[in-house]
Length: 606
Figure 1 (tube, rainbow, N blue to C red):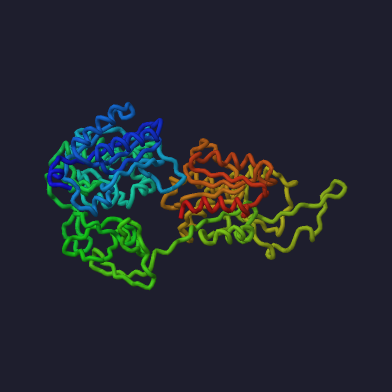
Figure 2 (tube, helix red, strand yellow):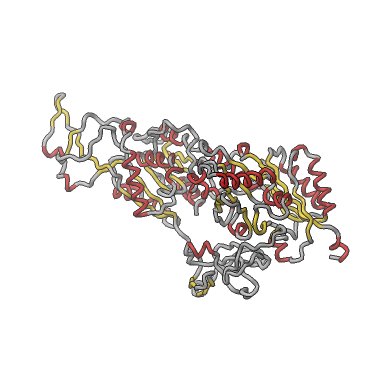
């Protein structure tokens, strides 16, 4: 590039817009023609619900691009954030940030809010109220004054929620006296969904002020928080993000440190030159990511100062240190694909505390652990036997863990009928109780009383095919029992329930948010299930990825009707449920194509 070209004013342009895009292909063609003709480089992401653009080029070209975009009514009200800067000088950084080429892609989501493949994106129309930089600053300023004049109640105090990744918050964040700042310390934005779920009680009833780099991440996250309903109404977001705030308050205002950006600039600071972060190894003040050092295990950016950095060294980030990551990956190659180190290589990884940790080999793949709940009048042993084929075919991706239900049932017998009268002999009562396998249940009739001195009990009447509808009691004790199981044998990635076990699992799914920290799981598999005690929940209201397996209307399931299992599935969100109907009766099918569909569902969580 000539010296003359380098002296021409250069800049970076960021903008996003949530709106229904009528023709994605036509819009992609526009960006291809316009950006190519103007010499713009960077990333353009198009989705059915909007666009997200970060491009760089000559300032005059960027201004011409803005004019062209604004001529489309789709972009009415768009906030175009244009900043002048030097041209990329570090080809490595420019390439990693996507500023050496033009990338235009059509995607499903502009930003990936959840790593759960079946979780539906929040309704962006209910996103938090936009606050301008001045309004945002004023709220923080007022909060400090309130504390000086007399402490307000905890619910009156605003809470700052940083929607960015840990490597961003390391080098800069809002710090306001008396105002709590919540830093989720996440590796990637898709982890924020789970953090919000796990910390919803810390947010309930509070005035939540959210911020991110340019605003787009707050749109999705604030909508998700507001979607939680009562207690989450007061959610606000910094319009234009930290970038607009620093433009309004060049001295930094309440923001300390630097604003991490996803282009060749790496970070942008205010006139306040305070350094918040430190070197991973020596703990000296340092906030420069230009060396692009990364954690060998999770690939997150880490800060290593010039004095500590040695070519070829391998580093482990603070999160991997905390969580005891036992395996590592090799440094990324030029095309950012990681390679696995041979198992026999042992590495000494420098830790920020000055200690050294030894790790070996590649990260071991972990199977999914699934807690299995048996049906009515069954036990863990019999259910394990019935699902032996399933366990065998899933052995490479899942471990099935079986547990007895908490309610022990008495043994019953059906007396024979002779001339219209019941008649029973001792041998008809069955073998001694101590020689029989115990039978259990999750949910029982409201008048259920456990235990019996008799070995066997005569049935009250003929078998009732609708008996499952009467088993409505015992949920609290069953839930307490499952909590203790989690504490003893957990953690588990998912819950599998069969018949009555599926009804119990569905009740747990309906309370998933309230059980955070006690019973964490990512998905549920409900086989031949039915709905009990779900009257308080609306159809489509249970937000949990779920797989429903049951017999079709011709499926010969004589215990649980097809309509009952289909009705249970209706309580789960349409975008997060998968249904498999089969023709094999009251079982979990393991022949193709059903087993392939089950594996496909589980693979999404590996």
